[in-house]
Amino acid sequence: MLSGIPAVDLFDAMATRFNPDKMQGDGGIIRFWFPDRKEAVSIDLGKSVMFPRGEDYDITADGSDTQITISRALFTKLLMRQANPLELIQNKEMVISGNAALMASMFGALDAVDPQFDIVTP
Image 1 (cartoon, helix red, strand yellow):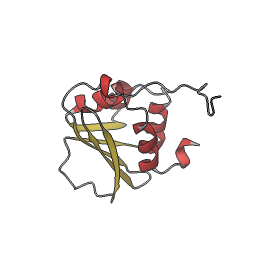
Image 2 (image 1 turned 180 degrees about the vertical axis):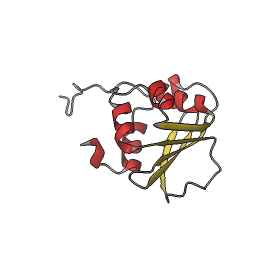
Image 3 (image 1 turned 45 degrees about the vertical axis):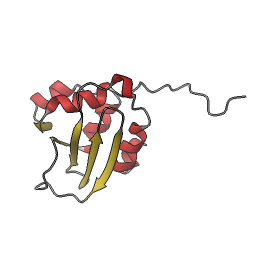
Image 4 (image 1 turned 90 degrees about the vertical axis):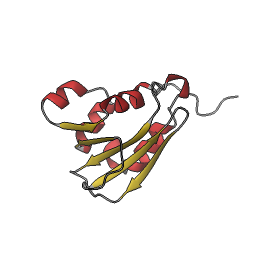
């Protein structure tokens, strides 16, 4: 199901789990490239906000603090905790240039998904 969601919508959903109290560092801009889907998303990350923006797929564009290139399938596995980010980097399946700590800050500021959340409460 996750693989069918456009990348920008997936990051919008992730942003709902952003917890400013967990955010470490000053933030910046992270650009994700998904070459297998020809999708790109920029994330404006700050102390109190995670704002994703869809953009044209242009790997030559710059202006971000961190650039991450990964297949969408592997990114989905990363989100589902079925892939180890260090192994992906070592195997060159995920390439990070710029400030790699910024990506760690983003993922560290996301609250865990609660599969038992109440849809409607009395």
